[in-house]
Each structure stands twice: as structure tokens, then as C-alpha cells.
Length: 88
Image (cartoon, rainbow, N blue to C red; front, side, top):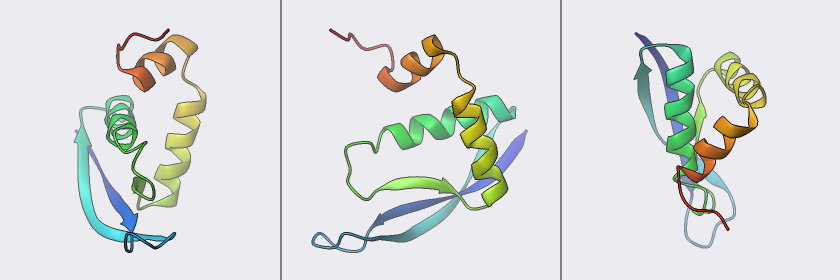
């Protein structure tokens, strides 16, 4: 089991253009690949919420995640983003 700390960022107010950390939580999974997939899905749910996103607290974890995303093959990346939905 692997556990990493993630921070949830959200806009300061409805009229603000900047975000602040609202909470820090633990994210756990069986291995790093499963953890990064879970993190991707959590962040993907916020893609239409301006100013809301998750980020790893540790910069080294954030860099490993970015490398993981860049290394995804096209099919898996497409499936993660669209979640099995129909795309015209």
C-alpha cells in the first residue's frame, strides 16, 4: 500500500481569480500506478470547476505524476479522460 498527501485547491471567492489550499488529505492505493490513476480521476472530475484542482504536496511526487501522465499510451489516456463515454 502506498499513501501520498494531496492538497485540494479552490478559488478564494466567487469573484477571485486565484486559488488557495482548502484541505490536505491522504490518497492511498495498492501501487504507484493505481494511485496516480486515482489522482487523475479525482482531478478530472474538477475539469469544469474553474480554480479547483488537486496537487501533490511533495514536489517530487508531482514530478513523478507528470512523468506518469506523459508516459501513458494514447488508448489509456483517452479512456481516463473520457471515462468510457461516447465521443463523436
